Length: 235
Length: 354
Image (cartoon, rainbow over all chains, first blue to last red; front, side):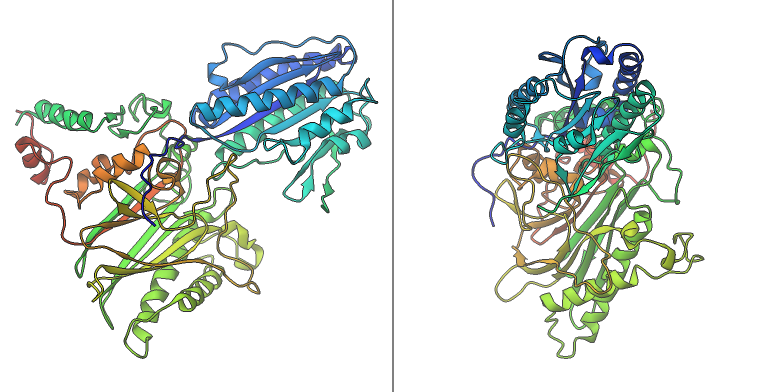
């Protein structure tokens, strides 16, 4: 083999994009939303404090109620001046969340490529405290997100607290290395502390992933206060 | 001797190559890393490792037959930040009979593997030792080791690295039967190079590899990758094959059989270079091509000027490069050409302050 005549410009470093998709519906009010507002700044500072993790990861936060909003655009945590807070209001539209997530990922992957960076498959951490209030329509948006024809379809790891059900959480999580990763709040637990543990686990996952070989997603393990709904993917 | 003048001349040379220097005196390729904005003794980012005693930097060099070889490994900033050791290793030696050859192993320990610090060093040593023995045992004396023999060597090395005594130097402090073999995981490129020119011209290379250890040949003003390029496509899918494997499984290494043309050079690297080099034709590859165009000396300066310890934001992995030059060697290196630098380079100790 000989060197090609055309110089390659795609020699940027590899980056792992993470999307935290977070339920901000009215049922999250009180201890749940407070736990999220306590934990997110710690996620931000933990990633920003390690220059290597910071350089190899990009984090975005999308919140959803009746509609969905990009709370934090995909960025390096060190470039975020401060972590915005979240507040509880409205309904629980999974469809809005998945629609916005798909569009956002598509735009972000293009932007990363334009920056000369090499992109690793995005990871979505989906967190909800209940069932969708758009049961008839959310699935079609979800299917567009995970369809194999969407080349940037993310790995989705799903977490449920309070009113979320195992059935829905397992439906949302997607396979990764032969296994589906979904976590449901255990009986007898309170949503606030469990949400805190969930976000701490996401932080560890992001940091460990960036520190791993190449880098590669390191799935959250043993999230306190939850039971793992892991399913062996037979597909 | 005016050391400031020497430093300015060296900076001028780097500037002509379009390069800057980090606070820790590394060649900067692309965007500088926050890890090296301050000196290593003030930043708090460059910590002595807390595990097995291991140097952050190791190098070796010499000649074998017609060939000149230089190898170096440098601990990546991710390990410096976390007080963990370098997880790359290289090993090379000359084989004298039946004919002169270079045997080289380059290994990259898998980060998550608990005992990879032991695994990759053991693998490098087992593979090179067995390659040398196989050459000497070659009954027809034609050094005709081919792919099947290399595969057998790696199979044996995979088995050997899973056996140790807890009292062995640097071995895991738990016995093999209590250890998951995956906790030793390492990639390997095992390379054999004829040290004398063949009748067809050039110097024959045979290499078997497991996992990502890219091998490049100098080509025009860049490099051409000789191993399969696995980082292309819309998304990078990172997966690593490694040794050891289960005893009942068969090693299936990749294989190349090619030549170093006269006057050219071969580079074997670990994955820490793969972003910068890619298929060998990136702008950074062209810079390294200039820096590696000929053997560089003295060795004490080699890490600095050859860019093995380069600085680049997001490139935090350990990096290792073994470079083999075939004659005729270029007489001019990028750092030569100014008398003050030549005198400095020729000295055996740092210049005295006036």
